[in-house]
Length: 376
Image (cartoon, rainbow, N blue to C red; front, side):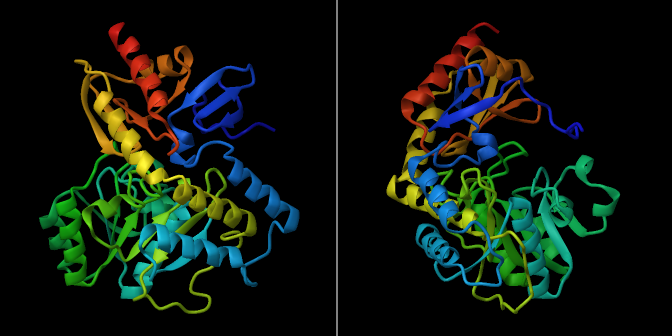
């Protein structure tokens, strides 16, 4: 049997990691500035993280949500402390797509309405509802196309208000920072206006913080730079540092009822051990502050070049926007300089390093990129 061939693979086989470093099966060391799509938040094989998972495996690995799991309650308390959403409730799932799927359902349950507003260049996942609010027709199958979704331009308040005024919108879903779409940051003023419009017209504001959350931008959630509070916040990726886990923070205005939502694997013991350890590490090692400081240094020190149009982002969620296709540059970074990076579209290198990244490690990237650009 072969694997279903849907991924473009680099010829690298990682076998070991530590912090922001990984080693392949030939012993080659790489600097990881992508964290496996922003998943590695507290670094590869952090000792506290590894110990927490090993200890949990020695006790119990899984039981369903038909019994009390104190680790879920511990995580909820930690998230309330770190995020400031301490009066919200937590619903646990396995991935970002599931988190968004359940947030969309909650918005519809809460309002009794069935239409969603989403944004151009958005990405919210590949499950049925999540992919319907994703602006990429190539990944929307005929089966997924029956949802009532209207796409509007980012930072266009008039279009949002015109749609909300029709009275049938259950919710508005927006990323704290658009990741796949190209590190597009909604302005603070726009998020404040969006919050006001959703309140005025009785629509639920959903903040997708799957990629931009968990301390990546220097705040726990990217939207908190604007000072607003969302009705629902979805999260995943950095939440488990590689262990599959996601969640939705739910406003106290939403009423829960038995059986309203459900999941088999969401909130399982191993996922909770991983997530509690991640939250503890972020708090104890001041990783939000580190992400803000090192990210600013990195953004300020990206080499100047006529090939680079702009560097944008916050904290350790950065995009370097080029005037030329970046595939050759990314390949040189990977195979010549041994640095992992991501891309967005054909013209952007995306940096989503673990939150433990140091200035010297960021400097390695800066000097390596400069050497590559000088040869172009």
